[in-house]
Image (cartoon, rainbow, N blue to C red; front, side, top):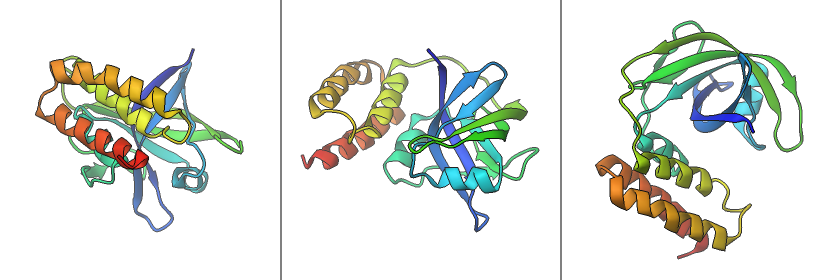
Length: 186
């Protein structure tokens, strides 16, 4: 089983702006594998400009907001590469794509770490944050999964949100739940 880091990745668009979205990166020894699903602007971006930043948000509203069309991110310039990272993140990595394997569904970029930095202390996990993260990932697979699976997963994840959520997690959960309901026309 691969170790997958759920994070926010920023890639440089052709016009000089940045595509900032949640992605899972796979750990492979000292390297990271970036595997965006087609279609994704990140694929052309990294092929053209082989650098990306990986930011670790502590607020799950960042991930939920990006997946539900809310403008919830502020960025600052990266330290060593031509890129941006999230402002207010616990830490970030700056990566260079050193190899590319094309695939019709999910191309692979093998990346080396150029730079990594910690920006503020990590104080621990919250079960509601983990539940929101899982629900956010689930919300990106709605066309791939049967509705019964989605409904069952959401019911289970809701338990952790109801028990452990603070205001940020509750708000993020609401955004994801709205996205899923809209997909099914509820």
